[in-house]
Each structure stands twice: as C-alpha cells, then as structure tokens.
Image (cartoon, rainbow, N blue to C red; front, side, top):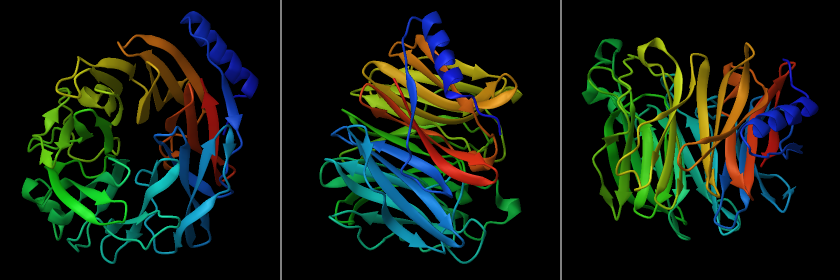
Length: 398
C-alpha cells in the first residue's frame, strides 16, 4: 500500500486551506493500540475527554480495549473484555461511551449457534470496573443483533439503538421480500447499573446491515438509519424519542435508491443544540454519491442535501460538529487511488476546506474510519493495513 508522507500531507492541507481561506494543521499521534489492532471507535464525553475502543486479536482470542485521551496524552490501555467466541466484522464493531471523564458503557458482539450472522449484543457498564456482560434484547432468537449506537442521556442512563433480526428467524430466501419478516430497528433506555428501563420498536422494516447513528438534541434523542420499503427503496430516515414517546419515522430526503440488498453503508449524524448535520451514501440511479443535509430545528425538517462527493466514493462516513464547523470523513477516490478524505463546512453548508489524509485500502480490513471532536479540532482513527498486518492509526486535525 502506498502512503503519502507527512510532508506531502502538510502541503496538501496547506494548499487546500489557502484556496479556501482556512488554515489547518494535521499531525500523527502515537496510538495506544498494539499490533493486530483494528476497528477503532471514538467518543468525546461532556468533559472533552476522548475515549477510543478497539479490537486486538491474538490467535483465536479477541480483546476489546480502550484508552482515554486528555491534555495531549493517552492513558494506559485497559481491557474491557476478551473471548474467543465473538463475532468480528469490519462494518459491525464494538463501541464505548463515557460521561464525566469516565467510561460509562461498552458493547461487543457474541456469536450464536446457527446462521453465519446469528449473534447477540453484549454490553458492560463501568462502575470503577467493568461489570458482567448483559444483552439489551431478550428475544432469544439466533438471528442478527448488531450495528449498535449509543449515547449518554444523563449521568445515570444511556440510550442504545440497534438492528434486531428477531422477525427474520427461519426466514427463507423466497421470503426475503416479506416485510413481516424484515429486520427491525429497536432501542432501549438503560441505567448506569445495566438495568433496561424502557424498550422501543423504532421501525419495523429497515436495511439488514447498514450502521445506525444516534445523537442528542434539546428536543430528545434522534436516530438516523437506512429504511426499507416494500418496493426495496432504501433511503435515510430519522426517528426521535422523548419522554418515552417514539415519533413516526421521517424520510430525510427522497433519493429513491432501489436495491434489493444491503449496501453496508449507513448514515452519520452530529448535533450542536438543535442544529443537526446528517451525511449519507447513496447509489441511486447507479451513481454513488455522498450527501449532507442540515437542520436547525432538531430534525423536524431538513434542508435540501448538498452533494459532497459523486461518481467515485465508497462512503463509510463519520461526522462531527465543533465550534461552528462540520467535519465529515469518508473513503473516496483521489488521483485514481482510494483515500481517506475529510472536509470542513460551516453550519450553513459552505465548504471551508478539503483534506486528503492518506491513501487507504478500500477493502473490508480498512473498516470505517472514525472522527471525534477534540479541543478545537478532531481526532481521526482508522485501521491501517501493511504487509498483511493491521494497527490502529491516530491523527489530530485542526
């Protein structure tokens, strides 16, 4: 794999920022992850402390680890859990959330007997140490449960949402078009002690394997995901939860992407108060595009989308809102090679800068690069693959 040198990265950032009147800097940061690490997840808590989780594999043993980043330094990596029976997947991977400078909860996936994609969500909450794992779903079916997103709702509870395949149990190939047996989107409010306080059915027909995304506004929790209609239209929808009440699913934009399969490419959402930035990939009309739509009323409605990339993008998005700026990462083509690209926009949708971080593999081992707010910029984490080995790489951009 070819890599752009740090000097060239700085030059690219400088040139793009000059042309768009926005000065930026990028630097690589020593990663706390070891060899054979992969699939990082980033989260910034209410104190500004960044937490990163990742997987490390040693023969058949998988370990979920984490570290926190504050004042320019990583804490010592800690093990959340380890096992040889996990479901490891490039698109459906563990996560961590935190509150008040400490971890709050983490999740991973445990393989079940049965189908290849029969697995359950395992969660653990942190109270000085990591507690015994539990599942937020109790249907007991050997079906897919994954693509989870979660966010603290207070110091004492958090909200989680996931794809739940309980209705797909024993579904034959001929029954795939029967939406009574479709993948569902479900959620739960969970206490800091691990008690499931409330359960929700958010949508009864969604795409089978596109990641979910969740954020918090002043008007409640908002979940974005890829919906599925009886005509196999798979566009991006949102649903909100407030005081235990679930809204009707709402279409963000009518791409009319008709595809009778899952593209494994969900949306990414970020919020600042009631302002929302929502980005997604679509392949409607055979033209791959990355789009972004903005809302200033907590998702009651969205502006017409802005096209960020077209023709040669793979998607795999992440997004953040920091000090009046929107940062968006994705994998796209640059000079005939796949590259990790990050763009910065203001809250009205005007582009401020583009940054080609590095050439990156478009295969599954590259996973989904992650970004999160850190100070007045963002941390970037992605799985780097070289000579058949993987390691999590971290950078800072501001």
